[in-house]
Length: 239
Ligand code: UDP
Image 1 (cartoon, protein in one colour):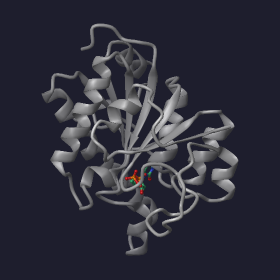
Image 2 (image 1 turned 180 degrees about the vertical axis):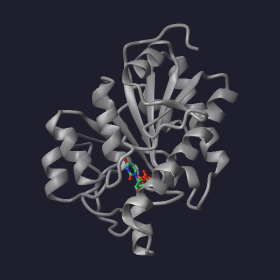
Image 3 (image 1 turned 90 degrees about the horizontal axis):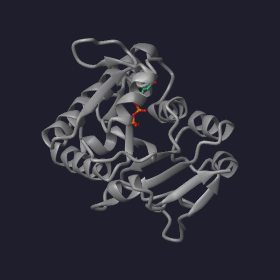
């Protein structure tokens, strides 16, 4: 655990896509690198809570296209996030970083239940807290959950780590070479222009509660540590 814990408390959202390294399952080299980068920031006193996605396993909307009932597919998606949480926890613990997983669907042998006050207590002690199983509710996304958790446990910002992009652009940079990255963007512009980096429910919850969201690229070495420590990489969405 860190020698001193600062009062910078942030919520890191990691997409499941990153964990899979582009495939189904867990790419351990990616998860290990991210774990070590998180640990480096925690060593410097940053309080880090994490919401992990599950797109590398299942997405309810895709399963429903394939013929599985939407809610059941969403539960499958939520269970996928828990496997990612355990992989991340393992690499953090192997590195000597105390870590707790809390899930929105109770599974006592695997993780603690989601208890916000307890999560805050863990953070104050320099432990990393990883939230799994989304909100425990079908029709929600882990993006929306990351805003909700950040609000409930009093984080100052949500840091959304993305794969394949390093911020929010005027157009899709993979398709349009003229696309330019915003350093700052308003909630309303992100919503109205549908700049498609997170779902509208996440954005509107952030707007209604003035929670800043920084979108940054997970891929560059050191990006996660730098962003956790407060460097202004990527794009911030705020009022
Ligand atoms: N999910 C859900 N409720 C939640 C969070 C997630 O139903 O509160 C399901 C949903 O089916 C989603 C899947 O879990 O597609 C995986 O989460 P998400 O797509 O947000 O992961 P990411 O895109 O970040 O990898």
